Amino acid sequence: MSKIVFDSFCDKDTFDIAYRLANILKKRSGPVAVCLDGDLGVGKTVFAKGIGAGLNIKRDIVSPTFNIVKTYEGDKRLHHFDVYRISDISELDEIGFDEFLFDDAVILIEWSTLIEEALPKDVIRVVISKNLEKGFDYREVAVEGMDDEDFRN
Image (cartoon, one colour):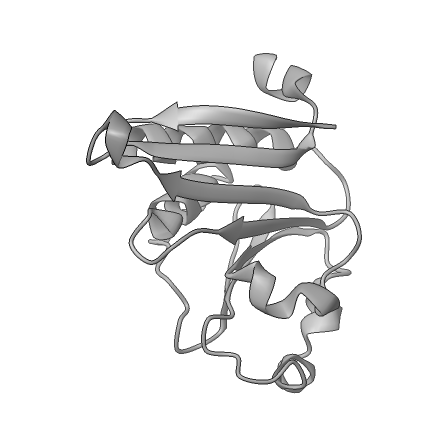
């Protein structure tokens, strides 16, 4: 599996990349963990909204910062985690994190590097980063854990 890098010049580009990814993921059976990382304000929520749209979720996707997890129903269920406020890995036990990892769903985990030791081995990693040399709104969206052929179809 290689690293696939996409250029995003606006929120719509980031949304569209996530939408394409979601259309690939909803065809997979079983749980699919997607680790979503990047600095504050880089577009993680926009990406999550694109995943939701691609899964045909009708509710607005909002960051679950204070809830830690929100679940949405669509063509495939989405468990959207934001673990930014997790101060100790044992807090994951309190919310039954392991049980979510066995659900036939897309498990989107923002700030996943904070809970690295609790993640399954096989994950899709998405890192969104800025590059001001390419413009104020430019983002690089790097996806690891998938073949680039998936995105060509």
